[in-house]
Image (cartoon, rainbow, N blue to C red; front, side, top):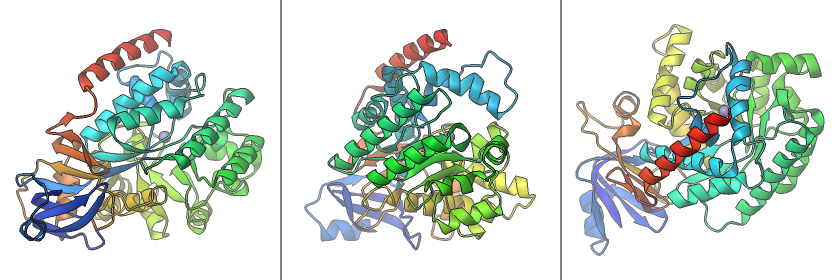
Length: 440
Ligand SMILES: [Zn+2]
């Protein structure tokens, strides 16, 4: 098919923009990107989908989220919650313990529906449901398949609830990674999930490392998010967090180190040397008041830093904008943050995703997966190669996304999700959320 007759922002190496462009899509893959009239002339027999002058761009990649937090919206912790550790204890570690596999599946429906609606076509998720671990990742994968979204999943192994639950976490990761590696197509992949260094013993880290090596899998782990992760690592093990993870072979190009707010210079250098990916989550860092991630310094040091939402939102456009203003604000310099925010979301997220999927994502170019979004956007100023970044940061939001295509198939058209009745899904989510709150 030809998808075109709109402004096309390719996000390819040259950031090409076509004033009236089109994509030629064959199956799950983009075959050609070019001028709409030229492509129609060259391929007269192709079905043409006319976007009526709207903006066509690649689907966005969320490099870190938690579907398990979907039912927290509107819930207020009962106990006083004054710092990050208390947020974990009074909110997340209460809620996740009550999630059944069915709750997990509906939490995934909620998060993935919003993601698709806001133009996110790949979600890299980090899951926890410590009293119902077995089958939880498979339930999330089923929800993703039902809605047609691309995902990388993992279970957050932790010793916080004892040895048995840690063991179950490892088993769920291993079983899921094995399954995902054999699953036909390229819609789902698995990482080995770790909560964070401060909830993992040396024995557990050693075992996780052994299992992941056997499976040739990378890790997905929170690193130095709060100051306590660093403090506890130094107190208990005499090593900074990143160095402790390195000791167990956790770092590497397939590993995602989330946050790294409090990582020191030596730790950042070690992340760089091991080619480990870092994922920045600006709204989450601000909301949890954990500090400001040294994103500008990380990029200057040559680290591969991507952008996630940590489930604060599913709208990557929002996170991009907040990433920009947070760096400007924190460094007291309005000239920093703009290019860095775009680098994280538009350049590095596609590179990070390419370490987990077989064809390029997040770019409209020959050979890339046809993960494409169409937005209602009639720009008030010129939209071209030089100005596209300004439009992405200050002109667009997830709510302008009208159509979402993933793997060459429309999963949302005219803002209606095509695979499932979202009204029914959300009604069931509200029922499940209410029941879950009554148990907290
Ligand atoms: Zn997180």
